[in-house]
Structure formats: structure tokens, C-alpha cells
Length: 183
Image (cartoon, rainbow, N blue to C red):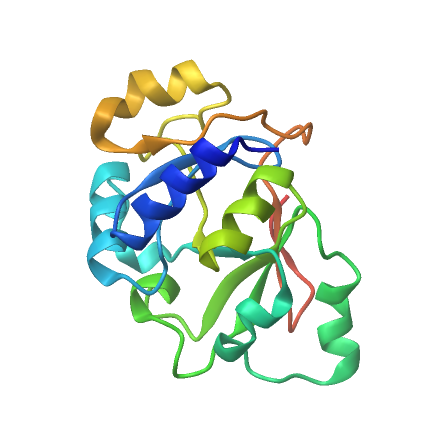
């Protein structure tokens, strides 16, 4: 669990358009308000990542992201529901309301309903968050708070806490085909 001080500081930073680093299921994540295009563009520049690659959005509850997701047949949606909350990211057909700076111009949006305690607390406080690994393009994801601070210094606010025990970043699967994009 996050301390009240760290949670309030992170929530203030996100609401003000700031960037945060926070622990996730397997690695440290970088995040911001997915509705704030300027914040997302700063995050992408910091990571040296092209917008066309898209970003993952996490939530503590499906209702926080539902407006960005096209309704699918029940058996298709159940693929995701059976894995949530948990360390499974799904590429879901996006509604026109899904921000293009999140989808990367794709017709799908990468979403996850997390169960990591710190990420849940953050999402409960501010709503959905961008969740991308704390690294620059071509680097391995940061697994420790020290690595995050060495890589990004004061360019982000850091939310201390333990990283989950997953051995690698979350699985990404396509909702329609069930195909695994990242194992």
C-alpha cells in the first residue's frame, strides 16, 4: 500500500499534467493522465518512443475504461474478463472516443484492469493511467527504484513501492483473435 503522502503527491502530479513512475506487476511503469495529450507527448519524448506504437492504459475497474472500448460479443469479452484484474493486457477494438495519442492511430487500444496494489490505489485516486515500462527505447525495463531514478532523475515524480512478482512485463493479447502479441 502507498502512504497517504505519496498517494496525494502522485495524484496531484497526474492531475497537473505531470509524469510519474510507479511499481507495476513486474517492472516500474511510467504514467500520466491518458486524457492529457501534452503529458502523453512528454512521456513519449522522455522514452524516445514514437506515438505510433501506442500505449497501455490501466484501470482499477473496467468501468473506468469502458467508454473507450467497442462492445463485443459476450464470449469475446469473456477472454479479457477471465484474466482481470490481473497481469493481462488486451488489444481491444477502440471507440472513436479513445485518444489517438494512446492508440497510436490504431483501431485498437491496449487496456488492463490491474490488481497491483499501488497501481490500484493510484487509479482509484485519479482514474485510468498510462502504463508503459520505465525505460527508453531499446533499454530493458527498470526493475528497481534506483534504476528509475538513475534513468529519469527529476523529470518525473516517483511513487515508492514494491514491484510485483511477475517475471516479465504483462502478456499482451488481441481480443478478437486471441493471438498473443507479447508473451
